[in-house]
Each structure stands twice: as C-alpha cells, then as structure tokens.
Amino acid sequence: MSPRCPSTGSERGTVTVEAAIGLSALIAVFVLVLGAAVALVQNIRCADAAREAARLTARGDRSSAAAAVRSIAPAGARLDVREDGHAVRVEVVAPGIWPLPGLVPRGRAYAVLEPRVAEPGTAGGAEHAGP
Image: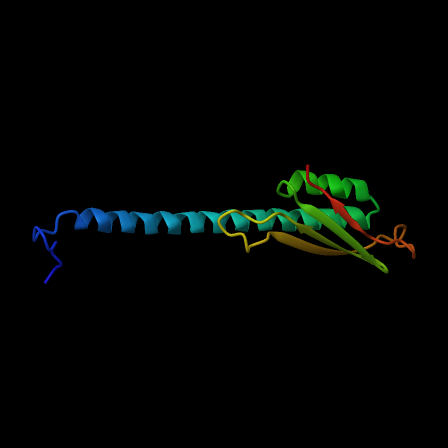
C-alpha cells in the first residue's frame, strides 16, 4: 500500500519529490567523480614536475628547476628540495581540490647529484613555485 495524503487521499507530487532527490544524488556523484579526475590529473602533473625538478637540481640548475615546476605543476604548487649527501629529494605539493579538500596532489622524486654538483655543505630549502 502506498502512502496517501491524509486530507485528499492522493499521491500527487510524490514522483516529483523522488525525481528531485534522485537528480540531486546523481549530481553529487558526478561532482565527486569529476573532482577525483581533477585530483588524478593534478597528481600526475605534480609527479612530472618533481621528476623534472630533481633532474635539473641534480645537474646543478636549481633556478631552472623552480621554473620547470611553475610551468608543469598546477598553479600555486610548492617546491621543496632537500639535498642529502650526494642525492637530492624533491617534493611538489599543490593546493587541495574543491570538492575533495582532503586530497592534496603531490609528487616526489629522487636523483643522484652529478659529480660536479655533489659538494658537501650544500643545504636544500623550500621554495614557492606558484604565481
């Protein structure tokens, strides 16, 4: 037995309400899937930027590494370069994505310093690669 309006005894408007709820759920799922796709693309861009920055830093071209991150990574990405002995570790972190604020796109890379660059006493630091 289906619910009826107590005063009129009709089911008038129930289909409209069900359609509105179903459409709202469909839109919410679409927004979440779209946000996940954007997060995936930005994560790939961060990984590409980190790989390129690690390669350039290992060659001794740190300013070009920051420029590469600005051009490859999403806007506002942060570049963090750490030199550890004869190697360099690079991390690129982009701002979170709107529908999924808990997902933070990031990419990490590791490279061995070129022999002419691997001098003791060089310390890495953090740089902002965004606009």
